[in-house]
Length: 74
Image (cartoon, rainbow, N blue to C red; front, side, top):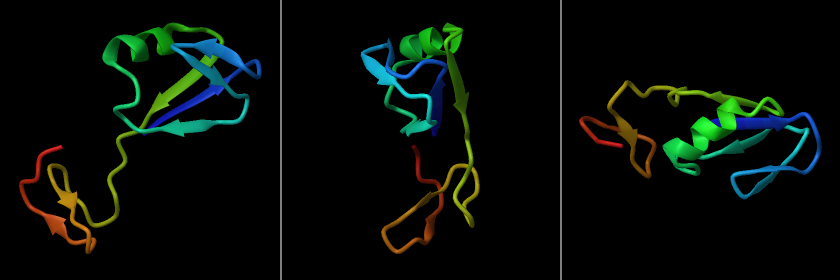
């Protein structure tokens, strides 16, 4: 999960108008190059969290029933 907060409402970078309120984006929303640009921008606070869902271990994904599938790749 990527969370971005701007110091100025509507500040644009990488094709997005960023808000002073934190906004969350999926991990795959921005390319690696775009993420590097966003992180380097002093007007933006960018945090990338790698929190796992409760009950999941690294390398596992939940299926539709919420059960962990072992060995599932991201």
